[in-house]
Length: 127
Ligand SMILES: [Zn+2]
Image (cartoon, helix red, strand yellow):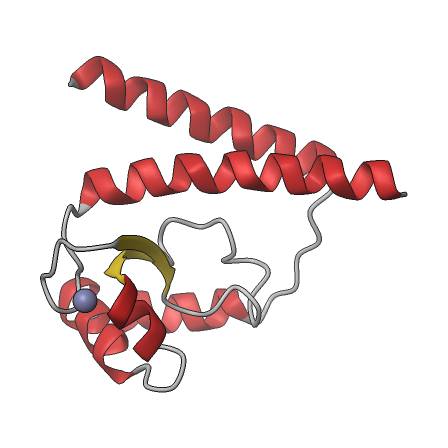
């Protein structure tokens, strides 16, 4: 059991490394305030409350550390940016998806890592 969990953690770490690359490629500044200092990949709908959107790039965008921290107690600025950019229907769709529970098996995570690695490699070829 312990081995399995540490394997999942290792996979998740690699998944988030790739998510960060893809996220920063899409926006190289904080989407909320425009800062380019201490950038992070921030979940719009927190990954703790939504397992479905945990690794979903539709729910993860570039934020500065400050805006990412603020988002914990004031979600309005990030939500507003999202709605202005993608529209209310896209936002409603995310909220809908966030309510679906998903459990990731090691196999699921391996598949996801593989898909993200291909995306990152495609990105490198374009550069
Ligand atoms: Zn910011």
